[in-house]
Each structure stands twice: as C-alpha cells, then as structure tokens.
Amino acid sequence: MAKKLMLFLLAIVLLLVAVVLIKTLTFKSIQPKYAATKNVEVSENAIAHLQQGIRFKTVSFSDSAKTDSSVFLALHRYLAQTYPLVHQKLALEKVAHYSLVYTWKGKNPTLKPVILMAHQDVVPVEKASLLQWKTDPFGGSIQNGKLYGRGTADDKISLFSLLEAAEKLLQENYQPKRSIYFVFGHDEEAGGKGVKAVAALLKSRGIKADWVLDEGGEITKKEIPGLQGKPVALIGTSEKGYLSIDLKVNIEGGHSSMPKPETAVDVLIAAIQKLRAKPFPASFGGSTGDFFKYLGPEMPFTTKMAIANQWLFKPLLFKIYEKSAGGNALIRTTIAPTILQAGVKDNVIPTSASATINFRLLPGTSINAVSKHVKEAINDNRVQLIKENAFAEEASAVTSTQSSGFKQLEKAVIENYPGTLIAPYLTVGATDSRQMAGIANCILRFSPVTDLEGMHGLNENISVKEYPKAISFYYRLMKELK
Image 1: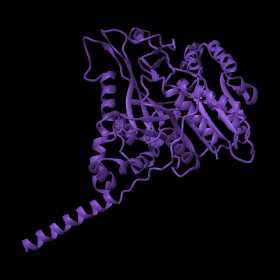
Image 2 (image 1 turned 135 degrees about the vertical axis):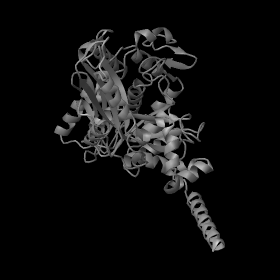
Image 3 (image 1 turned 90 degrees about the vertical axis):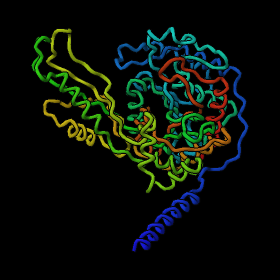
Image 4 (image 1 turned 120 degrees about the vertical axis):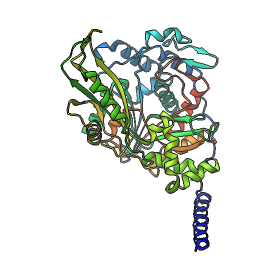
C-alpha cells in the first residue's frame, strides 16, 4: 500500500514538473520585429532652444494665486519666435488662459485625429535643496554631456521635441494623413485643470481621437530585474487612480500632566496602523499582466518559468514584487499616510488630530471600494472619514496592446531604438492624459528618453545625446501616421 502511494505521489510530481516545463518552453516571445532606421538630422540650434525653455520658471502651485502667469506668457512668445512655421500653419488656441492647443489639419478629414501631449509647468525647487544642485536649477546649463534644470526630464523635453519635429516636417511641406492636435497643459503638476478644460472643449466639438500619447513610461536599462543592461520601453497602457481621505478624531484634551488613557492622537495613530496592516489585495491583471506577457519570455529561465506558471508561482511572484516600493505599486492599490496634524503646544493634549491618507488606485478598484475598505479596516466610529474630492480620479481603463495606437508606437520605438524590448506598463503617477478618457479609448503614456534622472528631485537632467533621438522619434511617429 505504501509503495503504491509513493508511486502515485511520484507520478503526480513528475506530471507537475512536466506541465511546468511545457508551459515554460512554450512561453514564446511576442516582441515585434521592425528594421532600424537612421536618426533624422535635427537643427543645430535644437539643444539651445531647450536650454532657453528650461530658463522660463514655469512653476505651478496647488494655490494658483502663487503661479507667475507672466512667465507662461513669456514662454508662449518664445515658442512663437522659435517655431515660426508651427505658428503660421497650425491653428493655436489658448484654453484656461495658458494651456496651448495646436491643430494641424490632416489630408483626410474623415479620419480620427491623434492627440500628442506634454506639459509646460514644472514643480518648485525647495530652497533648502539649492546648495545640493550641481548648477542653477533654472539655468539650463550643460555639464559633462548632461543638460541640467527643472523640466529637462518632466516634461519640457517632450514639449520641445514635438515642436522641433513638427517644425522640421513643415519645412519639408509635410501634411499628415489625419489631423494632429498638440495639447500642452500649464498646470499638470497642480491637478491638470488646464487640460480638463481642453478635453471639455474638444468634447463640445464632438471630437473623438484615434489615440492619445502623453508622458508616463520611458526606456530603462536599470529597473527591470533580470534584464538590467537591456533597454526596455515601458509604454503606459493604464494609469492608477488618485484619492486622498482625511481621518479626523475629536476627543476632549486637557493638560499634559494628566493624560487620559486614550487621546485623539492615540486613536488616530491606532487607526493608521490598522489601515496599514490591511493592504489591498495584489493582482497581476490589466497592464501588469500584459507586462508579463511581453517580458516574461525574455527573462532568465527561472523567472520565465515562474511567470509562465503563475497558477503555481503567483504567491512567490507577489512576495518578490512586494519587496520594493515600485514593485508593490504595480500590483496593488497603495496606502500612504502623507500629512499628520495635531497639537499647538507641548503641554496641551490636543482635542483634535487628523491625518491625510493618499491612495493610488489599481485599475479595477473604485473610489467607493477604497472608502469601504478604509472604514472596515479602521472599524472605529470615533474616526471620521472625509474624502478630498478636488483631485479624486478613478483609475483609467486599460488600453489594448492590439490597438492601432499601441502598434504604431511600438513600431516607432523599435525603429528609432534598435534592440529595445516593448513592455506594456501601469503608470503609477498621475498625468494629464487621464482627462482625455472621454475623447479617446486608446490612451498611451511614453516619453522617448532613457532612465530619467532627478525628476521632481535634485539635479534633474537628461543626456544631451538623448535629445536628437527624441526629436527623431516624434518626427517618424508623425510622418508615418496611418
């Protein structure tokens, strides 16, 4: 009997091994194949144009009263002077005062247009960090082959690359088959009200776009475990939602020499701890699932085996991704306490304590589901939940990798960056493209740059060599529009 049981168990193990190996060996590459093309020649003044663009301190603040509108107007005058054909042959509209919409009429008005996006504004530079910058953050200077300055990576490189490419195409008397809209928001870093107004305007005109391209992903040689050194183009096919909830506790305070067993601060801290102890469930669906389909076959054998056999190894993969903040953000709705407020004096027990908790929603998780999760996790009627609706956004829909826009974009990437792998990707930050959900079903998020440095932080920069490649990328993308 024992021998038969052992043979049975051995047969089960051998069958399991066989299934795992078959699934691994049949997990074939789906990377597209296209011939490389030569980079186009760009204006010798192109880098100088971008340098000057960095010098405009187009900083946006959550409090719009702090924004210096004159700087945006000065940038607009500079763009008109630097790209004369764009401003002669394309229709320009200003929306919400400072957001720019250029319309390039296509040959065939029956075709849906394409919308190409970037944003003019940048985040502030903390005064305390100025001494840690290698150069003036708004100087646009070049050191050791790198262009430094706020906006080099986020997102003036896209804005100026698009205009350089368009100007060159117009010099060649090129007209696209379908219309192209350039949409350059002015307050992406402060909620995107400008592009929200643009989207409302386009919708009022009945405009439906074939696809939209905004910032989001990039080419990386560093960030993909098992593929370090290999260029991977992360193309955002969806975007996480955004929600902040305030937790507020009111309990009678008093003198700090006679503290009660539980204060408002104690209740608040306990609520945060309970919430953090109950994370949202992990998932490999949507864009992350597509990420595995595209990159899994390119991974080392053991990683490839785990991805090909998620039915068996999914818990292990979850543990691997949970180890890093970036990996964890790709597989679940995240919970981040960001603001804590309580007390006015060291010898006074506060009667009120509050915390702001920021959530980035995985596609498939709704704002209402998050609110329900928070309430159930805390389970304390003394904690009041207040949703901040000013910037609340549901997670985006997932763009199909079979869509026309995705196929055109991956072709342009491979032609301009030979040897690069394509990877659909979940964009964890917020972009202006989310405002275009009612304008197009296909929304993509990608910038043609490699391993950006210092975005929103110190010494933001790009390699000078990257810039002509970015211009060439947009040039071919527009010239080969189908």
